[in-house]
Each structure stands twice: as C-alpha cells, then as structure tokens.
Length: 389
Ligand SMILES: *Cc1c(COP(=O)(O)O)cnc(C)c1O
Image 1: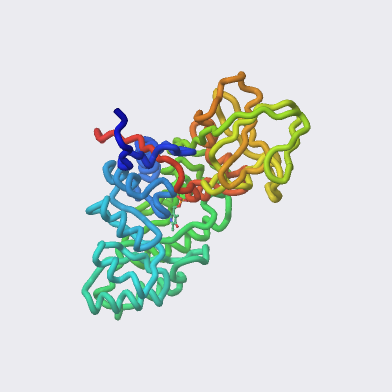
Image 2: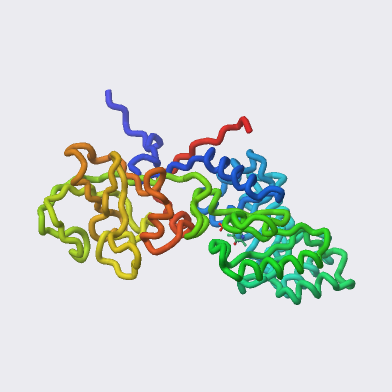
C-alpha cells in the first residue's frame, strides 16, 4: 500500500549540483606545519570571512581541538560567532569599528585591534566607564590600511599620562609584500615595527601572515597570524605551497552531449569546436564562485592564461568549452573513453588534481578570492579531524 507522501522525508541536501569536501585533518596538519615554521613564536589562526569560505564553525572547532588558542577574525560579529566554538581562546577583531563594538567585545570577550588614535581615545573612554578590557594595537608600517602611524605609536608608548585602563595585550602590524621576499618594503616594515615593539617593552608583538612566516627569523616576533596557508593556498607567486590542499570542489554532470566539428558552444558562440566533440555540461557556474573569467573563450582581460580553465576526471584535464554561465559550465570530455562519464558523475574543479592557485590564476585572481567566493549551493562534506591530538 502506498503511504501518503510525508514532506518531512525530503532531504534538503539531495539533488545538489556541486559539492565541497573539506578535510579538517589536513587543516589541522597545516596549522601544525605553520606552527612549526613559526617557532619560537606562537601560532594563531586567521579565520575571517567564514574561515576563508570553508565554514568558521568546523574550522574554529578543529583548530581549537588541535590546541590553537589565538584566532583573528575581521568583524566583531564573526568574533562573537567564533567565541561559541572556542571557549577560552583569545579572539582578535581586526576590523575595529568604534564606536559600536564595545558591548559585543565585552560580552563575547573579544579583543578589538585598535587601528587609529580615534579608536584609542574611544576605547580608553569605554574602559574608564566600564572597566578594563584587553585590546590590541595595530601600527601601520607601510601598508597604509589600518593602524597608528609609527610616530603616533611611539608617542603613545611614551605617554606617562596614558590611562591605567588602557591595556594592549598585542602590538601588531601587517606586511604589504610578504609574498615577494626580495621586496625592499619588507625590511623597511620590519625595522619600523622593531622600533615600535621596543617602545612597548613587555607587550607581545605580531607581524607575520602566512607569507611572512616564510620570511622567518626576525619577522616572527611572538605570534604568527597565518590564514591562507592553513587552507592549502599558496602564499604568493614566488613561494610553493607549503601546506596540503584542504578543499576539493566537484561539479556534477547534468548531461553529456555530442556536438559536431564547426559548431559553437555556450553564450556568444565564442568557442568553435575544432573536432567532433563530447561535452559534459556540469551544474556549476559563476553563481557558485566558479568565475566567468575561467571561460575557455569569450572573456577579455585574462593575460597569461588565454586557454581558460579546466576540470579533471579519470586522469585527464578537461578544458572548459566557451563561457562559464551562471549555473552551468561545459567541459570537453572527447578524450575520455566513451561512456566513462555520465549524468550525475563528478568533475573535479580544484583539489588534489587541479591546484586551487592554478584555477585562481587562470581566472585572473588569487586562491583567497576563489575560496571566499564559493557560493552557498555546494553540498558540504567535512572529513573530521582525528581527536588523538
Ligand atoms: C588576512 C590577514 C592575515 C592572514 O593573511 P594570509 O595571507 O591569509 O596568511 C594576517 N594579518 C592580517 C592583518 C590580515 O588581514
């Protein structure tokens, strides 16, 4: 007898077009690798933008489980979320929007990273009114983004009238060119930062992002702040990835079709087939962060990669044919044996066989952008980290 259909049986996760497999053990291993490279400094984790697009909760939980006790996020809102998964960690809020975040910082015990003299004044007032609460101080040494000037920082360090309640627990700065080890700005920023750190004697200091950690030595100070390397991204054009891939993105095939030599594929008819072809049309597009600039043809401004992006299956690179569209992308599977891919099968977009940074470079961007643009349509599968430490 047929049962009436029970709508609670719908699995909202079924019928997905693409999936992400996120290897939390690889994430933990990457953090341990960065921690070793940062030694003797401690190693934090930068998990802003929803853990670089991979999920702030599983990322924070795994790294906390591995022993990480210093986290950096962008907004106080992100910080309050991470607090739920990292009970006694120190959580720094880098985009310090004052006035406004005082209460959130107190309630969620977040450390605001003050980025201007105005912030210092506002935070000091809040501490006089409500009691002492730790803060961090950002000093601009050459990036011209956030931070007190070195002059302002030195004056503040020497200011004997500085209120008792003002208690920075970290002095930090950010390198503009850490991914170019030979760039002269690195040395200039290091020297400027060393002077400020000396003036704030006894307070911990932090300068390095992932690429900065690779500069090593004097750059390390007390606390390193890697982000991208934890997620398997390369730390710059000139440095090989030092960590392993964490994410595999795969798209499902909607249909496989045959097309003739001389026909065109996708919008604009910009790709003319040079042979009779078999095409896998996949459920992935720019709405999923698989950027239109990866198109095989028909987009301008790509520079070094005129040939466009590719997917991967059965040991073969599968070039993108024509333009990537909002929800669909066509891959050339002519070189695979007939029948080896069918509707519902997967094509790897990036992961162990297609480097995240190569895909990003083809799209004219960096791995950071590719990760943080991953859309909400993927079915996400997290491979757990081992709990044995
Ligand atoms: C994002 C960020 C980091 C981490 O940078 P990665 O290049 O991802 O390692 C470190 N410090 C600051 C100030 C940042 O904004």
